[in-house]
Length: 137
Image (cartoon, rainbow, N blue to C red; front, side, top):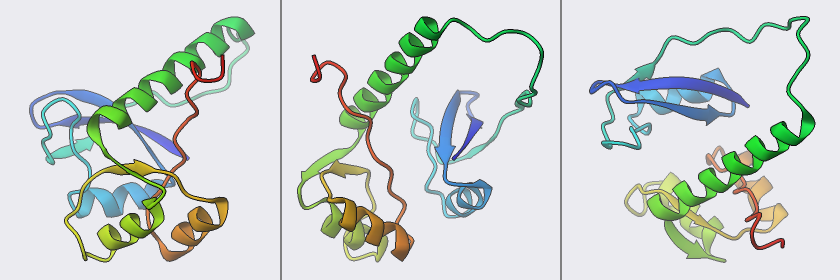
């Protein structure tokens, strides 16, 4: 996975994850990347500082865990607020969207490991949604 800082033509900056740099290039060229603030599809990479290994000690594990939990909660909330829930029919609906049989839109739902693997092998862009940390308590 690779993370890019992106910026829309209105100046909104946001972060997005991609399988690799080629996946970003394909999605950007086809207009599948949009700004989460204004929905603009005019998006480009923003300037990023490279990740350089240094000699400084990393943050405390508890702080890292807290930040990861916040990120997972935020990502899950964003998906739930900005995508259509399709339930156990996720794999079928993802294929229909991928092959142009139904309008392009963001979806989430359930799929078996086998279904998810098959989608990836077909070239359908999918990613697992982080578990709900609150539901685990």
